[in-house]
Image (cartoon, rainbow, N blue to C red; front, side, top):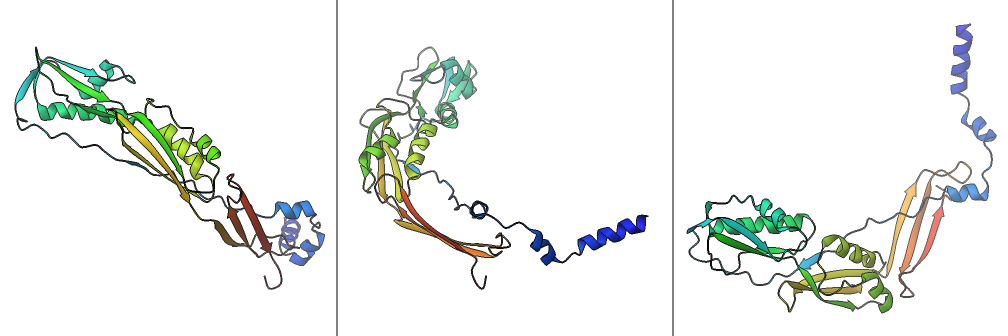
Length: 264
């Protein structure tokens, strides 16, 4: 009884492929359309944000002098509490610290801001007269000054402005919402986005300049696979041609050809 079952299984495996194909149902038009592979999706690239720094302050010559520091204060902060920022520095009351060590504590505060997305924030030791062992670290959290959009493409100015959704003057500069705005603009085919933050006219502010320049007007791709249907041809080759932003509305006019013709 077991030999009969084994022989049947082997015979089934070696059935002629043409016999199987003869029993396959003919695909309808809808089935053939579903077999057409979708156009490839290009990866999103976050536009670079260039930051121009102001002139750095020179370090004082008497850097090795130690100061008895009984209390450390932080001013200018609104996003984090003073206690949280002092804790970040690792400060212990009553120790003797050099100016270099105090600037190191200021750097830790700036790093804390940047780790949380406030990438232009600064912390520094302002000019001060130290009394009763009290030292102050000042914070500039980084706020927007002027926002300028320079559109050199055929994209509608209204659409470009709407996608940028310029942040309000005086609002805090954070990486996530800024990248989101720039990504919306860079997603438009045929448009290149360049952005720069430059020192503003007021202390602690940065002006945002966004430049839109023409990208590739025509793009396309060629593809090949062996995922075709039995009746339409297993091996296929095709291509896509895109005309980017023809109406200035972020639109794309595409033509696509896919064939499994003679010789494939």
